[in-house]
Image (tube, rainbow, N blue to C red; front, side, top):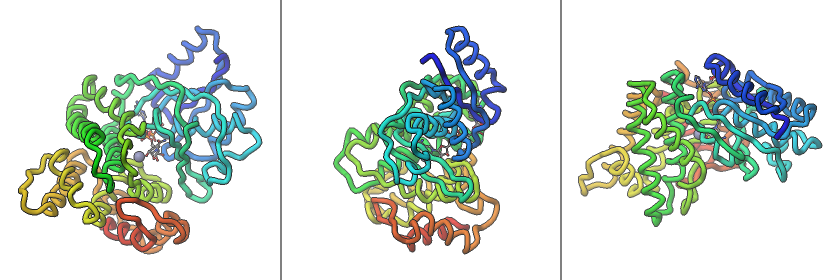
Length: 365
Ligand code: NZQ
Ligand code: ZN
C-alpha cells in the first residue's frame, strides 16, 4: 500500500508514543498517510462514516487500526465503505446489503480482548438510536495483525480484566452447546480458559510481566478466530444480551458480559448439565463428587462468579451501572434484543423474548 488511513482511539496510542512511531515508520518507507483519531469504546457509526469519506477522498489502499476492538471494528467499517462507495455502511450491519468486497485492513493490537484482530466480526453502534449491531463476514478478517504484548503494558487494571472476561466468553460461547463429541476442540478451549484465568492474576500483580501478557494476547486471538468453534454450533446469547446493555448504558463490553453470565448460566444449565459439570471440573478446578452432576455444575458457575469478583468484574447489573435497571429499561433491552419479539437468541437454550426478560431480571440485583 502506498496510501494508508491510520485509525486510532482517544488518547492511549498518542500518549504511549506508538502513533508517532508508526507514522514515522510510514514516512520512512515513503508511504503517504492520513489519520482518523477519536474512536471511543462501543464505537459510533458517525465516526466510521466520517472515516469512509476520508478513505474515499485519499483513495486509501490500507486501513491501519492502532488499538483494540473499537478501533479495529471502525477500521473494518471504513474498509467496507471505501470499497463500496455506493452503499451506506449501516445497511450492511442491518443485513440489507451484503459485503462482497473490501479494502485490506491491518492491525496493531494494543489491548487483548475483542479478538477482532482475527475475527470475522465487527460491532458498531448507531449512536442516534442506541442500536449496537454485529456484522459477520469473512471480509472482516484483517490482512495482518501485529501483536506485541508489551504494547498492552499501559492498560489500566480494569481494561485488563474486561479484556480477559471477553476472551474467556468468546471461548465459552462456543463451548456451551449440545455438541458433546468434540474432544480436541474442548481441550483447546479448556486450555485457553485455564491459561487466561491464571495469567490475569500474574499480569494484575506485575503489569510488566511479558510472558503472561503474551499468553493472554495469543489466547485472545485463538478464542475468536473460530478455532474453538470447530464442531460446535455455539450459543452467543450472553453476547447478544450484553450488546443491549452496552448500547444503553455505554459500559465496557467485558464488564457487561460478567454482569450477565451467571444469570444466563443458571437459567440454561439444565439443558446440558454434564457440560457445565465438565466446565466446573476441567476449567474452574471444582472437585467432582461423582454424585450429582447438577451440584458440580452449579459449583462451577459459582466459581466463575468468584473469579469475576477476584479480578474486579461485576456479577450483576446493579454492580455494573451502580443501580438497578428500571422496568422500562429492561423492556427496552428485551425488545431490541428480540427485535420486537420476532427474533430469538442462543442455541443451548433458544431464548425468546420472555426468557431474555427473565435473564435481565435475574441479573438485576
Ligand atoms: O481510546 P484509547 O485512549 O485508546 O483507550 C482505550 C479504550 O478506552 C483503552 N486502551 C486500549 N489500548 C490501550 C488502552 N489504554 C492504555 N493502554 C493501551 N495499550 O482501552 C479502552 C477500551 O478499548 P476498546 O477498543 O473499546 O476495547 P476492546 O478491545 O475490549 O473492544 C470493545 C469493543 O469491541 C466489540 C465490543 O462490543 C466493543 O464495542 N467487540 C468486537 C468483537 C469483534 N469485532 O470480533 C467481538 C467482541 O465480542 C466485542 O463485541
Ligand atoms: Zn465479546
